[in-house]
Length: 489
Image (cartoon, rainbow, N blue to C red):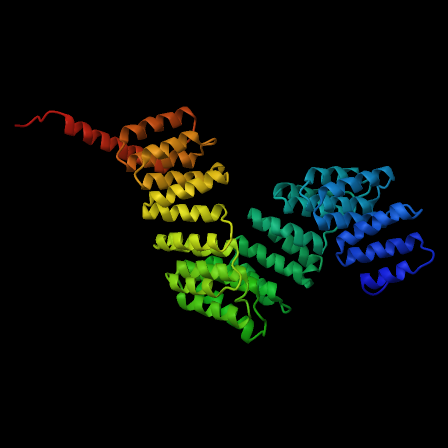
């Protein structure tokens, strides 16, 4: 059926007699247009209102809808129906199930389906490789890829294989494997596909082979915005201001390629690393001219970048003109105030945030506690502690350590110890913070006692903890020397 899904539905409803092909056509149309709910609803209609049974054309479309909805429960229900209908060994149905389980994070079920398919094809392997890599099982991705190359079926990697396995090489730093894949792509003629070339450039960039990446980038005559973003991001992460901005200018002036949000975000790190205010302003100008000044991610990143470059006023100006401020926007401006010498401003912003009806999250509270610690404001700190307990946030290890630091900075080591003793889970960081706190508050014996207790709990001390104990020992020796009788007249 041609036309929009709505038009197709009208035509379908006007049919006096409907056959399986027409039901499948309607379901397929909804799936291709990513109308996932409609796909499921029409499938349910087919099951309940018609005499037709779904076949191996119907089920992949329905399974794809479950994948689009990221609903593993619905997918498992459909899988059960597939088994009842005897379609579980069908190649196309099996491939759809593998992709669905991979997208939903249930990789073991994807493997189970994969192993049951009697005759696997390239899509089967690609789907499982993708499922593993998307869920962080990088070694397993490599294993499946190797098995594919060694299989008796003589399967040859295609574009989908390359753009799936190359990011795994990038994440693992497997540049040798990446180079082998580069050679294979050349032999198979896959470099003609821009996605493969971009994936190779990205792999070389992330593995630190920037010159290899640039050589491949320069040879590529059909670049898109992704190509430029990858290369600009690579130079930015390398800390090369000159190359980052030379490419950025060339992208727009010579190639007439417009920047996007990713371009701006990729170029920002080099401005922050080198406190390049001029370059940062240039980047801000690009974002404004391309109308990204309404994009929340860009604004939040610019707020943090200006603060890192020493201009809290510029950060505040960006925040003030934002039409919509989410919790992330408030967190950005509160965080930069807390970390850049304006803790009072951070507290004031927090009060404004609460008044505006935005509910604080863990990041807000962490920044606020940092501000209270810098201010040594026990009053505000206790108020935040109360909020933390009421909302169950004290169970978070990061918030727990922030509260310890607050009480320690306010010279309330006894309060810090009470909270420390009440912690359900004491991380290495919390032990170290408490030991350092005792040392900073001139309570050397307490620091040493807690250090011994930490060792009894088999917690590995950090360099900070060891330094704190050395300081405590020196403090204790000095106290004992003061109390001892004078030897000389």
